[in-house]
Length: 329
Image (cartoon, rainbow, N blue to C red; front, side, top):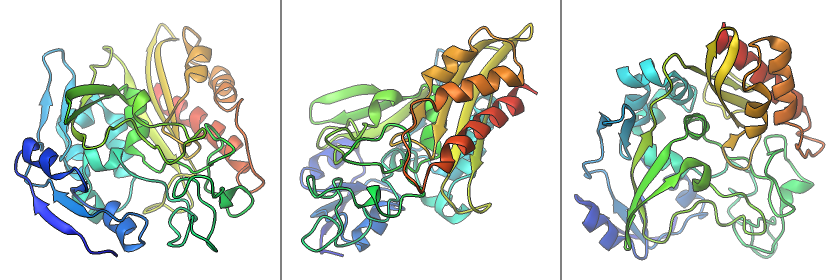
């Protein structure tokens, strides 16, 4: 770990003023790990734990506003979240461990970086080290022909196949969350669909934040009356493990037909993966397993696999089908 300057900020303005050459730190559950590996080498850390961004509040339109400093545990067990946004509660409780959920924050989870073993290798992107275009553009992607069992099959490019690791963000993709940020140029909103970037030719650009911008809140729209939601995560072991495939679904069924549907997937995409293809295959259709399977086929139709992760295609299809069956039972 490199040496750095440390300061605390008790207002957003103070946080923004101190972040010109550094990074914000909240729970530190991702950033500190990466600093220990020298993947992240900020010159300054601005501790934003004192910021008054810890509330979960109802919005006038019936939605929910979540402060960026709300801890994952508090968000998962919040009564309104469990009642109206079960998919988010379930996603959060499926991630990490209770100790980490007690520290990790909403804003920090949005900023979570890939668990690709090459990205996290201290010498990646350096002469003699593994190629990693996220760490050092132009050095290649060692995962292409190396270890890629955990890697993405959707949204990949010839520059990067790293998987986005978050569970929370998959649920938020299905909920069509809106990220509120504040920075040197004022306040702005970013739809969750636009927040995380596909790798393309610039895998080192992972999100839509501008330099010095701070996430302040996340807004969840009110769901249609009668909608139900669920999150299903498939992994190698029952806890403290990242998804091989996951599915977040929000469904409203009337008269045996699907009138509202949102589907997002995790463990298979380079970003939290909203499947408009699955939604189009289900809208207005009967709520039956054969239609669920057709939607899953549509969701994975564009998958691009490597030898070690080809199994994810069928696994993800089964995950989507099972999640849909669960929420419509």
